[in-house]
Amino acid sequence: MTARKILFWIHLTAGVTAGVVILILSVTGVLLSFERQVKKWSDRAYKVSPRAERAGLGAIVVDARKSQGKLPTLVRESADPTDPLELGFEGDFRMLIDPYAGAVLWQGRDRVYHFFSVVEAWHRWLGASRGSKSWQRNLTGAANFVFLILLASGPFLWWRNLATWKRLKNAIWFRRNLAGRVRHLNWHDVAGGWCVAPLFVVSLTGVLMSYAWATNLLYRMTGTTPVAEGRLAANRGRQPGSVRQHDASTDFDWNTLDPLFVRAASQVTGWRTITLRLPLIRNAASFVIETGGGVRPDQRSQLTLNAETGEVVRWESFSGYNLGRRLRGWARFAHTGEAAGIAGQILGLLACLGGVLLVWSGLSLAIGRYLRWRTRSQTEEARELVEEEASSPR
Image (cartoon, rainbow, N blue to C red; front, top):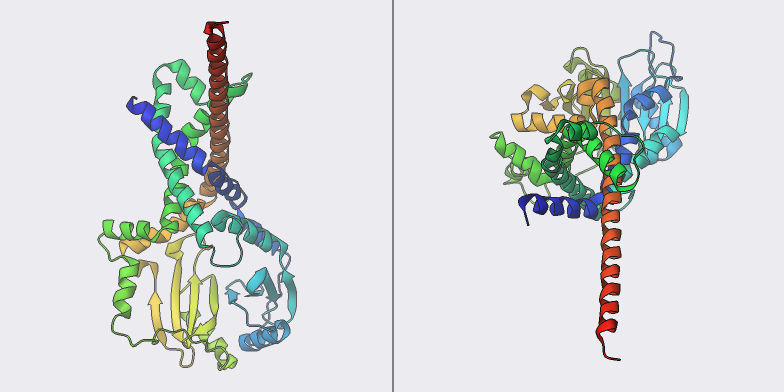
């Protein structure tokens, strides 16, 4: 076999093996393309009238805890005085509260947020919502890796279209009045030719987010210590059980929540949102402070305060990260296209649509090849049977 035939069979086998999962990832990628904008649009009706005084954050959290019977998982405050205070709970349950009057503007299981939660579960774990989801995560990670191989090998197979101008013209745009195998091959060539570069970025960043070894490789390539090794070094010498998590939320004085938010707000000039993650682990209040629209890692910082004293336990800004962590931070936003703004999201949407077409046409070509092989095999068997009967003595 020639090198091209070997590459073709690797490409075909990999595509057939992981095709269905890649198709699910592509379809859900299309649905998630403008998740952030759709969520923001769904909350547009809940605006408040700014007042001189605000209700206490601690009192709001305590009241919400009493009404729901459990602690929220996040408290998000916006710098826009007309935005409501957001409390998030497990199971896509949300509360939007007037930060001035303390009144509940809306509460419930938001259908828009729940829709995207379900789609994301399919994108990351093939629909699993409970349990460890380990084998589902491994399967989507493997599909991402296989897709990377397909995208790397595809251009070498597509290269044949550069032989003549006619073949190139037929491979860069959809042709009409085609049917069957020729139509699917045209679709495969066009989708691959236009979408291979953005899909390669999507798939590569997907591998980075799926595998620790890929992230550690990125760290080593940039000359920095891998995350896992850094954590092991940090934990070295601690007594057994010293890193055990302790929920301090039950003993916490919620009246001190406002000073903690004020301290977090003073940390960054020009902040737009501040998010507190709950419960409080080891008496630490962990804040995520964003100065942009939440689509760039360089506009996001993490602040950890001592929940009792308000002292800074840890401050992490993007500029303080090493090169490996900065590149890894961009991976999630490059994966969705948000790193390049609306244009990047549109490109990501088109790339995912191209991925759907690539998988659909590729599987169709593979099934057609198999059916033709079966037909030839049956024809040859019938011919051999006829020849055997004709040559046998009567």
